Amino acid sequence: MGIVSSQLSISLDGYVAGPEQSRQDPLGRGGLRLHEWFFGLDAERAQDGSAGVDQSVDAKVVEEMTRDVGAYVMGRRMFGGGDGPWDEGWRGWWGEDPSFRTPVFVLSHHPREPLLMRDGTEFRFVTDGIDSALRQARAAAGDREVAIAGGASTVRQYLAAGAIDILHLHLVPIVLGAGERLFDGITPRLEQETVVAGPTVTHLRYRVLR
Ligand SMILES: NC(=O)c1ccc[n+]([C@@H]2O[C@H](COP(=O)([O-])OP(=O)(O)OC[C@H]3O[C@@H](n4cnc5c(N)ncnc54)[C@H](OP(=O)(O)O)[C@@H]3O)[C@@H](O)[C@H]2O)c1
Image (spheres, rainbow, N blue to C red):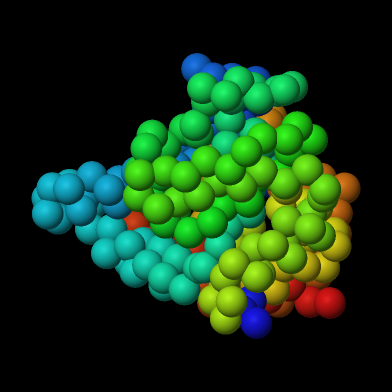
């Protein structure tokens, strides 16, 4: 059985999304700044290394974290589309090629049929809780890793349940002041494994102690 991991970009004051998430502003006010370093990786790849800042350190960290993932679990707000019963026309933020290329288990209180995307990613909607979603993700992943993709509420629940082995935090030097705080109401014990300094963010890898 593979490990269970989670990776999140986090502000210096502990937020993983800004306030007032909406269809227009999925990451909440100011939240996009958490991911600028990551979007830069795509720009760099697309422009063959000519994007200015050398992000090879960041790219290596991300590649190492994602290469062995066999299934993902995410919350319905990360998948998007608003609250309440599903708008069946909503197929996620990522278009027809979301790039997960594995089963992705989406936690929701509202049932929905699975969605098979063009690149092989399959979104499966789970309404019977985090244990069921993790059990299904483990079965799909086999010996590979299960990644709890986010957002804050989902990762918090798995941390509280003691189900995450490795937590990767990309520490972004911004202060958001409001939004979704990762550690609200939970007090996991973490042991630092590695620290990698990228040009604009710091990559922290923690083992979650039982
Ligand atoms: N910083 C990062 O690296 C990072 C990574 C991922 C996401 N994010 C951001 O985080 C934000 C979303 O986080 P969030 O904390 O607001 O929400 P979330 O964890 O993505 O989703 C919460 C929703 O998932 C469903 N859900 C959660 N637990 C459930 C359970 N046990 N049983 C059934 N349904 C459950 C509920 O949806 P229903 O309404 O259907 O019941 C709930 O409202 C977004 O802005 C996203 O972009 C940031």
